[in-house]
Image (cartoon, rainbow, N blue to C red):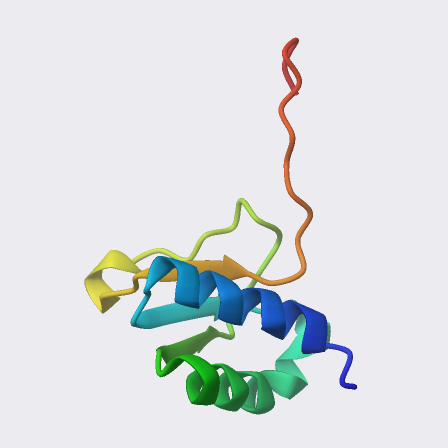
Length: 90
């Protein structure tokens, strides 16, 4: 099983749940060599058009500019932790 399999499955489920047709995925540098395989599997299982963001990616707060102009329905930041805000603040 490829090391990206669990994250790919989560992406497929999210795409199906949201009905996204055009998806942009931000990959950390260590996952970029697998971009073609990830894109192929997601496209085959969802029918969505998948764009891989190969620019810089410094975390979940580093959202690429101009996505709305590209018709992106869903942005998936690969491998980032979920932020949980505490009542007293960050």
